[in-house]
Image (cartoon, rainbow, N blue to C red; front, side, top):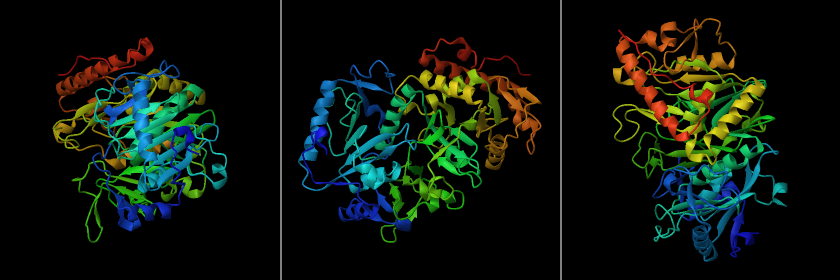
Length: 533
């Protein structure tokens, strides 16, 4: 079955049950059974992705399509072959079982791909079993993979400079051969995001928009909403709603038939997890779940979710049906209709962006390509004041094509399905984070989200913000107009204009790297303003 990979070793277990994978992981000292029966593991040297070590083979099949640069690094076919042979040799020399998982990415048969994951550790196979869409036994009889990832975490390349690498570790995609290899890192998220990158390549070429977003649906399944946003903006929190079943929390496609989840599981952050604030995630920790890099008592196995001494990126991996109010838990496909609301989330720590605004088509493209939020003081070592962060399409590290490709697809689908698009600021309004004021209350943001998804935003009475020219609704139930319009809340207008112009310059400087000449998109960006008192 693995001959096309040149793996001759037949000592592998294919699509093992959860119980077998957990039992083998414990017996091999890969992890321990702990919190609520979950398997707890450490991922070794790396507890997060290593984006500088990600490469795509330069070849005649895909090279003209790839957005080459800081995200997608080039590597030659010759150097790939060297690394590939090195990886395969370690599998052929294994004196114990390894693992094969066959399943699907994309809960839409028209647009799914068959994925095969080859791993040396049982817990890594449990990870992909949780994260991807699990097949029925009948699906495996004539299964042919569309893409294969071979995980060789224990393989490093000491002569990395000679082979065009940035370090002794590597994640290399060969789109022509439909194979990727991972070496030097045990972090399983590389497999999840590896397939996401592949979907970002194949689907837009079929006129299907691949998206880094969460999605939920109304109770009667007639209307869906999309939530885009970088880490810390509230993407997971705001899409998890007791009144709206979850489609998925991270990766989706938008086809001619509607929205569909790429995955069969969730990969939630564990740091500072609170049972009262995030009960859905907390209750998903059970037998079959994985806890990565959490700190726990060696005797009682009790987890301290607030302890970040192992990693700020501790994680929980579980099947989506472990979330009680999800389509998966109801035995339904993780898919929904075309959205009646698309929401861009940002945590603007500068207090310039409004709490809620409506975007026109060109503004939507501009903000989608920009992918803005602000990193807050204390979230990363060395950050004292807020720092603007931009990630194209709200998922820059996983894009394989130029951001404009995805933005144009988004514009087409918004127009075709008449889906309104909104920007929601979950950060500060009327003052900056450095002023000592509090972040926008989560209850107010949830109220705004409810107004959007219920179709109760009325723009008959509205205002425009000074810098981005965004359309702001006024006289909303439960919300004060001085709160809704940023400049009305600032005590010092000189400081408001100074801060707004600074943010405008950051936006404009970031946008230059995309080399976009479309004047309609460029004119949708913020403008320097004069004013004050």
